[in-house]
Image (cartoon, rainbow, N blue to C red; front, side):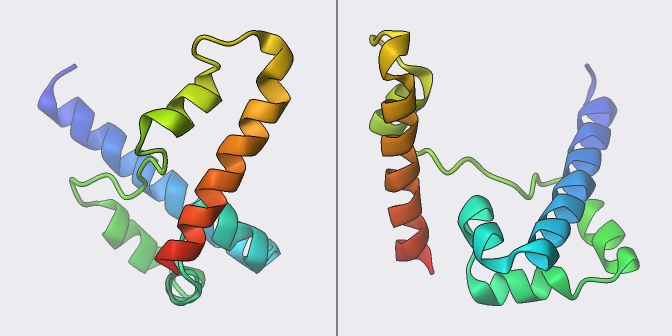
Length: 107
């Protein structure tokens, strides 16, 4: 994959992300805040974007979405690293609680 292909993929991912985010926010704002990990103010800005604005924002060369799992604990819980599948539901719940707490810290 060359640089032009990577940039095209980033632009496509950005547009898809913005469209999904806007749809989630309009459908259920509270759930969207949690699932996207954005503040209420940011959600308002995303919800108000016009299609032309979304295209302009998406056309940059920087990926807009980011990982919210920034430590080994959450990664290990999500991947069940070193654990059996029997604890999968508990591990995912624990990871969700940790990420939700981080969302509250960011808001």
